[in-house]
Structure formats: structure tokens, C-alpha cells
Image (cartoon, rainbow over all chains, first blue to last red):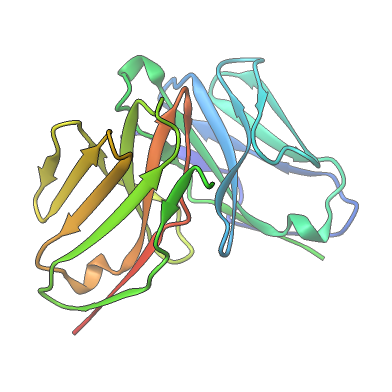
Length: 115
Length: 108
């Protein structure tokens, strides 16, 4: 069974703080993703990574950066947290080697509150 | 036009009912499709992949109509535990595109 682990379930940070959200997967998946989910807006893609040291902007990258130094770990960084970044953050991984029907596997989410 | 459109619901149905959800997608290059379910304040979990010929998994049946660019999910004999939000998810390139989901509430 694929395991995607996010380091924190709940996080409270102050405006202006630098925030790191960590995600680790144990199935050697090439692709990793960061989404945020807000009521009425569904899941929106922030950044994704095809492989180590590769990253691409998703639909809403502003205010975020990412790091993928090792295949199993994909970090999301909020350089200077703002209140509009209060949200549920979901990490996911997938292996395109398994074919078109290989699904995304999600971590259990980090609920971030910025005060 | 949104990439994925779903009726947000809620669909309120009694136990034992049959309920169907539709979803339309805009990108004709979508290669494959999934249905995910998401419980309140939890992460989405894969319900089933959708194959071109349609497929069934127990009480759940998924259909794909590429010509009309829509996907459906049929749930038979609804259970209270089926109450959740159902997300329609096409794959475009290496990205899965999520709709906002359809909420189902099954009542006794």
C-alpha cells in the first residue's frame, strides 16, 4: 500500500513567518504534487514535480515555492505566510510508469491557519 | 468554461436508493479518468478508475462518453456510509484535474 505522509496534521503560524510543509512517499513515485483545498473552490494545484530537482508551477503558485532534493520528499514553502494562505494543504504522489490509470495517492492533509 | 463541471448537490437520498452523478470535462486530450470520494475534512480517496467500456465495482458503475465528454457514476443500494463528496478527475498529461465535487447525503 502506498503511503504518503505529511509531517503535520494541524499547524498555526503567524503572518510573515516562513513555513515548511513536508511530504514523504514510500513507493518510489516520480510525480509529486501539492494542492490546496478551500470551500467551494475544490482542489487547486500549487506546484508539481516530475522527478528529483524538477518542478513546475501549477495553477496558483504565487506566494509558494517547492523543493525536491530527494525522490521521496517534496516540500512546500511559504516564504512569508499570509492570512489568505489559511487552507487545507494536500500532498499527493503518482507513478506514470504504472500507466494512464495509475491514480494519485494523497497524504492526510495539513490544515494550516495563519493568524 | 471550467475544466471539470459537476453539480455540487447536495443529493439527499434514502438508504437503498439508486443515485447517479454526471461530470463534464473540457479537455478532449484527457487520457484517463477517475472518481474519488472525499469525506468531510479528510483527504480524497480513490473510488474507481473509469475505463472506456465502462466498469463496475460492486454497487458502483462508472461510464465514460468521450464523444460528449462526460463521465457518470451510478451508486446502487445506497448506504449511509456512502455519504461523502464525489470528485470527478480527468488526467491531462501528468496532471489530474479536480472538479469541486458532488455532495451526497444518504438518510435512514
